[in-house]
Length: 543
Image (tube, rainbow, N blue to C red; front, side, top):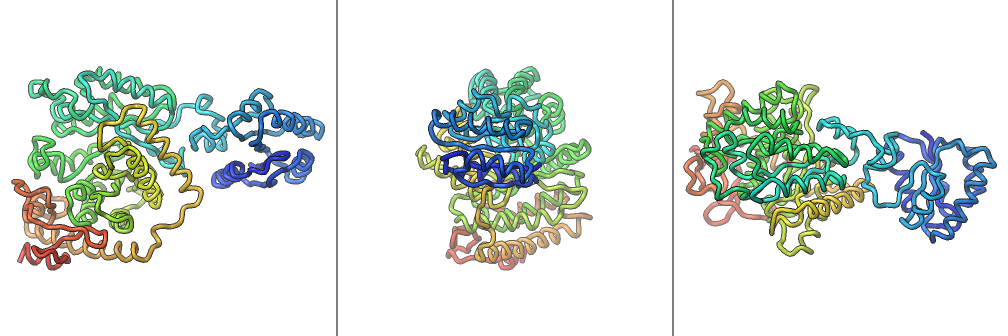
């Protein structure tokens, strides 16, 4: 499509129309910018010479002046035989109200719309969310539909004795149209004891999330999302009866994707009844179950090590191990998650370097049968308690994350350090993230090109390869493929190849590793605080 656009009459403000044309070019359209203060006669001349399919008009002065300018513009367009073209208007809300009243334009934008609304219009899908078809209802299709903007996801579940506040909140979030994915934040009994009501503890109902207990509860939660922009819905995986739980979520919630782990959500971290080795075996089976059904799988493995103060190299090695096992299990669409600020003593440079190293080792497995979609998120433990500082942290974190150009951005509400976000706070947090994303996509410097970042990323990849080889050798005599063998992987934790300071006195782990922040990176150190490279650490552990 050919698009001609500019600021009309005596209006010299062109930032909005310039951005409109930039987005149009991203969508593959040919554009011509008339510039500021373009009189109606010049619009006519340029329309005759450029022959646009769509003419965009911007005006950001007073509504009274806008009415006169737009009436003159339209009269000249009619006289010139150009009224059969498509017309779109952009301006301040008061001026946009005048443009809507006049009725010359098929779409009017006043700056309050989500960025994706403009993309939908430029793709021919309608001017506003209310006039479009229901957005795609599978994850990969929705990623393609919304690109270059990432899908926005947020956890939501009101800790309460009933699901009613969460049902009402999901409806409000859907109507606001700010999220593409609502992730149900289930309470512990919902995850661990859904199929075992005799083990549920009524006194802990709602602790940490929404207390759904029946299929009907899940149907009500899903039904609340069937309005507004029809967000996808997903929930945490179970920590017991994993396959039965997966079938439930897929059948009732049309679960957008499965999130699972290898080493967590079991007796080692107190999140479930399974032993470490049992948990690894069941998580591998869960990956395979979703792979057979062509359903996406998210790996949340690497950042759980970071949240427990493990050295950066272990998070990178965990990224390799999870991608390796997901591909072997038959997963076709793998959502690789990169949680920033985990731990929050990482500097921006070292945080980005760790993520780049994780990407390098994981995406090496990508091919025509194994697609990897990047998902980023703010560190759960990184938010300040003060709301003003927390809002600032959300914005700065999202801007850093955008350096990775994620397909999905998991918004963590700015209230995280104080309380689970209400629907209004989810909407506010997502709206702030949208603003940052739009700014980044408009022309963000390449933060990944920093030579310090690149050097650290290369160091981490090299060190992670040494660690991965050590794990392989650990099980070489007992397993055909040690990197996918539950017994070998569990043993790697027990002997300390995979370890974290917060695993002290844990019966499944060694728990003796020491770490510290050094120049913004998290490294293993000896008892004197001196850094240890991976070769030295492995020699100490295995002899």
